[in-house]
Image (cartoon, rainbow, N blue to C red; front, side):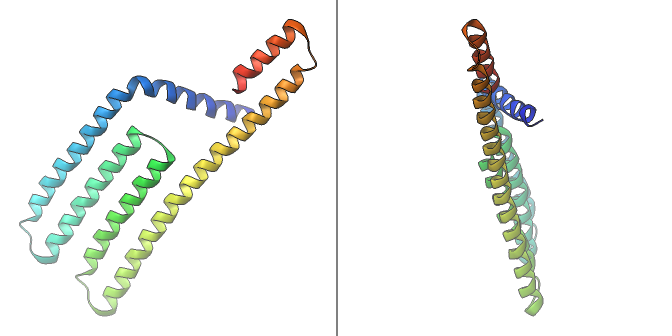
Length: 180
């Protein structure tokens, strides 16, 4: 079972790597277009906020920023699907949501405002911690799969050592194709 999972992970990584070279230009164009669309949508949403006054206007702008940040985060992860980018995207969204929550707290006063701001900060810290933990889990899984694959390769090569001639060559070739 572990052997199959290792093979599938490595095969998927190889497929993604080989297909990403062909699609790099298209993916980059889509990424840029999505970012530009997010900026254009933000400007439209922000213009709608101009009709509002005081804190309602500030909240409206922060809501537009959250939408823009989410769109850009999805674009980034779609373009370059790595643990690092997932973490960056999640942190960016957490920061934007924090700014919105903090702006909403401005309508409150006294202890309610203090509690609101502390809740907003706590939510941000939790989201950032979750994002960082997700990256660590992903990295640990990749390391585990690599370690398992290397160990299985060494076992396969050891089994080949008992053979000789063409059968040993075939065995080594199979091991290399299967695990490297």
